[in-house]
Length: 130
Image (tube, rainbow, N blue to C red; front, side):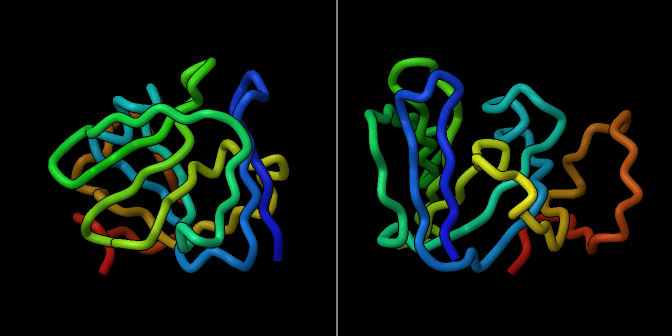
């Protein structure tokens, strides 16, 4: 399967070969602040599976965590962690076809904002899923 996506201005695009191995909604404070939203959704793939076209900037949001953004418009594109070497987690909202994203769980549920009410029946993990 192939997944394609990009930023708001079109200066940064990606293509992913093969299927994601994870797809979750994250409620951690760091993801909320980076995206400016009450939660974010992402899918994990091997770094070698992703081909980038365009320039990225990087930000180390916490120890061992690197986040990538479009160099032009600042769209948050991905998350990488030393906890998962060789992986990159791409934000699902950047997909050209967001219907390809199929979430399987909520992570960092303990950090959720109380005013976001969700009743999707997905498993909820207080911290990260393992």
